[in-house]
Image 1 (cartoon, one colour):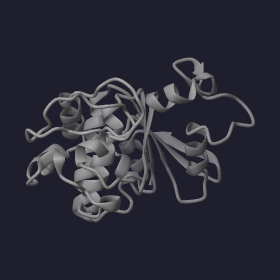
Image 2: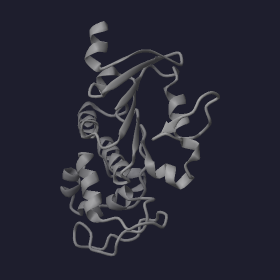
Image 3: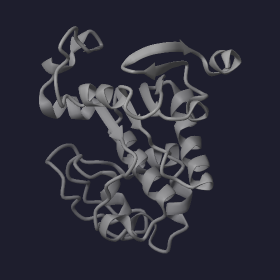
Length: 222
């Protein structure tokens, strides 16, 4: 787990843009398992890299459909509450099992609040997720990223717009992913406290890494 920390306008957004292939680096290459990221086909690259941003985009569909959006057609089996899941509106691909959805939601600390809703995973979230709180929307966005089982997960200021309690719950989900060690996690944040569980923290200033190390070591220097 690598974290990039620093104030706005100091280069973190540039790193995000490079990882998202919005533009190419003028010098050097970015490698994923030894392969230049520009050598990956478009569809494949967006399966191996998942991104959770500051303001998650949710659609006027069910929670389940939002989690699996873009992954392919779900299996024609009963959903979490005994009803048909229905089409997800994404691209054609392998069916998505309910077990995959539940696993991703649990890792995102979302399963319990979803099941507490009257319709569970079949709950309609409304346009842009209007029926949900900021923390709930963010955790569903994390579940959507995790259900793809990516090799790299990019968390871009994933807690910066949340209230204290929502931030705590989302941070709990992030900590689970960090300690799980099943993927590479890149965390972008303003505050050092947000990335305390990261293995390596890089402090960015004016486009350069000016400090790096684990959380306790960096705090001790201040």
